[in-house]
Length: 241
Image (tube, rainbow, N blue to C red):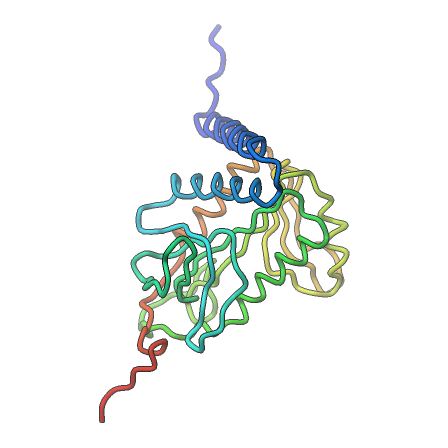
């Protein structure tokens, strides 16, 4: 009697999980310094994103900026639309218009309370920027990843490599809205937000957190409704009279 064939997508998730886990372990074993080790792991995640996203999208590290010259905090990984993104600086550390940002990823070895709050502050530094320097489009329909005006709303994903008690971390933000999505690479939790009651909005255990990370990033990127950036607002160019 033949064994039941395993779903190829199940196989894919298992293999992706194994590969990412092996790459992260290898990167972390190369150097002793936590900062350098963390940077190597960021590069592992960067490679994973580049392998799974369409060519129309890029992955870099750096800052986003708005038309008033206000910068976000430095972000580990930035996924942006190549088609709509004029670089203001792109030499290892990028500065791109906030309107081109699709999602950002913050990679932490372990999401301690300090790192948890830091990720939240980075998310707020992005969401507090003015994202109105775009060319209005007459036919944009609001979707799952967009706001009421139909434009894409950036997502920040906080990744913890080591096991972390996220319920305890969330309890530190009672009554506040938490902007990022937090994903623990041990597969225990995927969660986002604290409601007005102070309770966790939603949690979910996942069998393959690496695959979930790729799925989230791919979904947010490919479904993003990016519109042309009005670069004249950045350069303060005004039409002649």
